[in-house]
Length: 420
Image 1 (cartoon, rainbow, N blue to C red):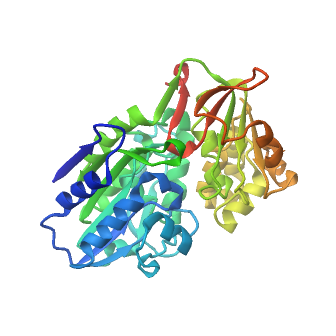
Image 2 (cartoon, one colour):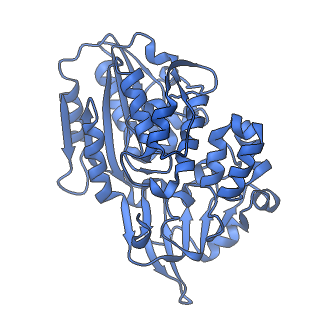
């Protein structure tokens, strides 16, 4: 079964989405269902509405559990679940604990990894996923958005399961595989080194799981979710068709580089630089050498999503690819937390442009301690008010030209000559 629904106008309506979901689930009589949606950091995926619809459609015939694909992120609060998923009882939401509740399902051989990584990775990788996937469910709905992503190239599909519900060993190693290969070689592309790794695990270790993919392509101008496409089915076709549409909706290819880029991070979505550094990942291919990135981040209150990540980021800082690789070779705690090492690599411009975090919940000493520049949020917004700026090019009253991104999680911005 495969079903695609693409908006004729600006967005699919709720009725069109509901009709597609009913058609996709028609005739299915599961006894136990697991829904795996994204967490609050993917609020604008419209996966919240889809999860709510499927829950109410299926709860009369099946026991329905929901496990948000947290990956390394913090557990969702009751308030976040209510805002994103609507009236689903909070007790239906299960927490993925990436360091504890996982089982080993197979090992990816070193020879395969050496081949797909062009020699940048030469060790086997153990694949771990949450044990709940083998808990007797006869239907697993994997819901989420396909959008450019720094670790895999284009998000979702196999990543939603293998990272969203993955274990610490696999998440750490897979993130480092991508970091070593090079973020800018992967952003916005299918069939990257990391995607090949995920697909190998899906095919070789998880092929018997009854997964039905429900993939969206969305944008959110002025915070209003627009669902441009919904792709439902088994296998890889939903991903490939979603990527094709996302290339049209979530890419902004510029004919000239940005000298000053201003990015706003909504405080509900972005509370750590672990998440907020999407401001860097998604714009770095558009910013000029010697340029500036100003991140307006009123909700940022920590660096990592858990205490281990936070401590390591504070200790080593965003000091550039070569420095982190040097430390990675000599510091056992970075070897044991490769995902954090990869994050430190991704979160630096390698000296190519400056990065300033404008915050109100962290101190100058904390921000500068990890190698970012500091600015007080209340001072930055006097000049760069996110409520007054428009997506794209803006000319300030004194003639300064900036490029404004109101939510970096929803796209990729690149200067044409940097697409390799």
